[in-house]
Image (cartoon, rainbow, N blue to C red; front, side, top):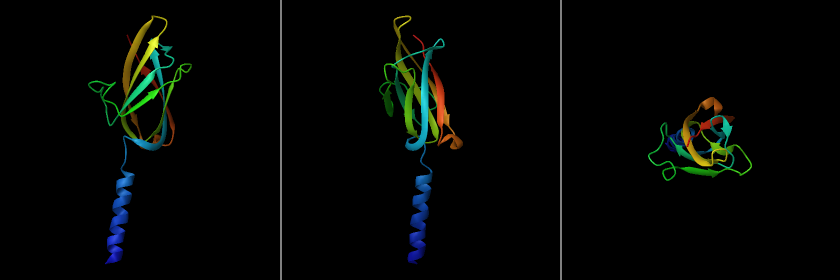
Length: 126
């Protein structure tokens, strides 16, 4: 009887751990490239909403992860994601037009991509 209970607990724990998605703790790294009319935006900030396919109502307050980009880099590293759905919203400054730019894109990390680096262009506009 103890073996059956122990086996059931082990199987349940394995299923719960294996089904985690839409969260951090994985091995996928997303490299987001905010772009305004094809021009890279340096030093942008990314807001990530887990389990989302659409833009959240207020993406700069309703997010699960915030990553501030380096001022001299045109990309943002979003590390340790699991497979699943995410919405990436980016905020930056386009010095060519001297205006703030914002925008986002839905991203689906597949099971086969869960241990890879995924590059994504994030379109932003005034």
